[in-house]
Image 1 (spheres, helix red, strand yellow):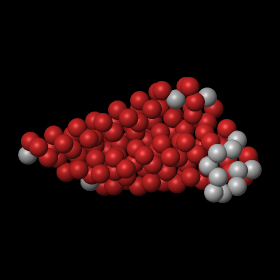
Image 2 (image 1 turned 90 degrees about the vertical axis):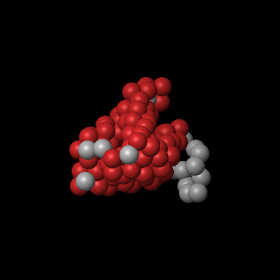
Image 3 (image 1 turned 45 degrees about the vertical axis):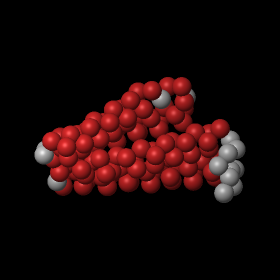
Length: 125
């Protein structure tokens, strides 16, 4: 199960990194707290952080519940795809938001797979 726990902690670290990028964008573009609108560059960084938070709410419990019923290495592998997807999403969204589809898919599909695995494991066992 250590792989699953490692992935869960990397998801948290990734979220903190995105938060740091929001702070950096605040300084770069002069957007004073508590404002969440201003320069488009700041707003893009902020949306990446918020979109990531929205997915984390579902991802983390699904990751741990799926790992109760399915091989931990497989569950962790799916979680790793999510992590890569979020980085692709971040890079795309901050440079050209219309190009974020691949990152979104590589984030959402693993999340949905983990939810299905968690539900199937809970219902079938």
